[in-house]
Length: 367
Ligand code: GDP
Image (cartoon, rainbow, N blue to C red; front, side, top):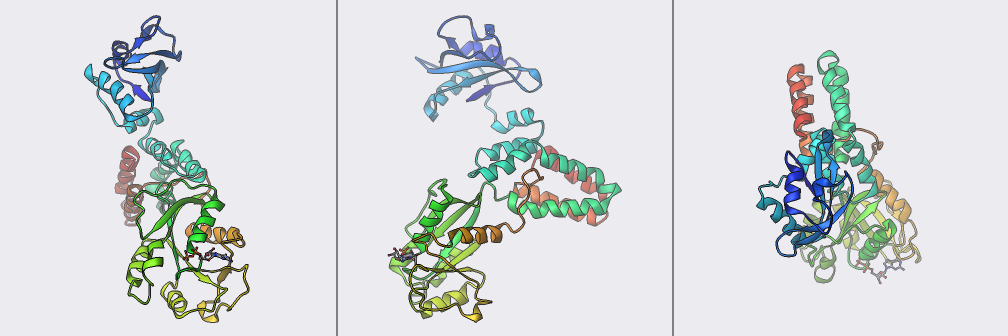
């Protein structure tokens, strides 16, 4: 869908739009869809309509066929008569009345889960703008209050900045403990494989899934399984580098077979991992050891599905310990977080005016 806006938008659309029948587009009542062609040769068959833009200005919406080639035909026709192409954000800024709301709207289109989308929608509707305005008013008269609110926003940005990119969870464990089975079970459990990640290598299999509504990429170091034992062949460094970028490691152990040296080494290696004892549908060959920090190992069966609900809850709590409420202000881009940290520093230094200017910049630029 293209939007033609600005002075002369309707005239420009009239020049390129060849209606199948009836008057030129400019003669149509607002919001009445018209069918016709745009573009050289037969061009693309499109639906065009006059719509009210922000502030009531007459604009034209052109609904093309999908696919880059059909859209390019229409764009070329418009550019051929001097219409300039603008980033979608320009129009969104006008439509939403603020750069931050426009950005939230843009990110909304990339949100992979409902829950992420709901949070972004609240920002597109102005939650973050409102909070920034309130903080802005307070920086000089109530610095302590402004500091508290800024700190809360910065905390929440940890979640906000993941709404599009998601979190990363890595599965670790020696071969045959059930890692890929667990990956599949989690993907099935979430019922939301958002997309197979492009760039999947032979070494790592990943799935984008919704865990408790949060977008999460789960990675299984599959290639290591067949080719290398992570401990014996020094492949541990490779495995570690896979897991280093992860927000959370799930260390999978097979409780139906005696623990091996590799298992013990992995437990020591991934001290912060959530330990899962897989295959609890089979008789247990060992019990968690006290030395594992209270033996917090969760019994699951990737095969039968036992314990998955609890595992999902634990992962969600670990990744997002303090979930924001949907209607709350949530910074959602790293640059916003940086600028908030800057503003917080300024208020703390007693430079309320400078902090106010930093917040004004944030609100006027969005990032
Ligand atoms: P990976 O090498 O760690 O990825 O292990 P796989 O997921 O390939 O599983 C290894 C074997 O264990 C396969 O035969 C699975 O069917 C089996 N397996 C995995 N999870 C379970 C489970 O929860 N219970 C039982 N009984 N078998 C399982």
